[in-house]
Length: 282
Image 1 (cartoon, one colour):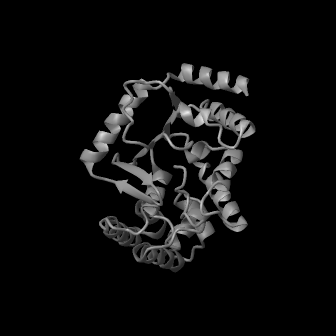
Image 2 (tube, helix red, strand yellow):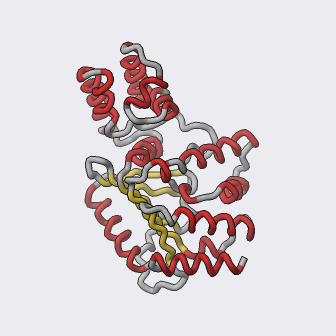
């Protein structure tokens, strides 16, 4: 959901860890033993075939509720095998790619919070803004990598229309809009998209004003997600690095800061007013 975490910085798919590859192989074996194709299995566990394919390839961390859903389709033994495999996988705190874990959490989150001070959150970027971001990537991307990144970012944005029961909240610094990355036309498309997405019943978009003496976001960008079991995780990114945060005390502090920043940001009405004012000035 962040500026860069759709895939690896090289533009290719994330490298699969041995643990994720093993889990994917187990899932594939159990599915095939039941005589099901990915296209037949996926809707029965209420995920897309493309997403199941990535899990089986070891390119996505398995969602928390996948073993339970698989048990409904493949039987209780298969469910127990997958649950044990997933539990073992989650105990490995040193997975090579933190994004693989966050991607799985993001896919099934019932609450998703984002605070950005560097770039517009990926879920809210129109295609023109996405292209402006990747066009300025250093080292430069090849044309194939560039188009792959754009397609991956757009594909992730299906979360907003496909998860109407998930509560999304985005806090965005006004400076990101004032910067006009990509030029006036790109900024106009961005503001149009923010206004449109903000009209969704389950989406909150608030702008943090340029001047806010009580700003509680001095520690920088952060993402927070609540799973169906009501566990909370935090996620932060730096230069070519990222970290998943699961320690309750740490995540609690992040939630407190996010809550405080919501009260410091412009209200929904004031945010809409500012966006329309900026829209008219372009």
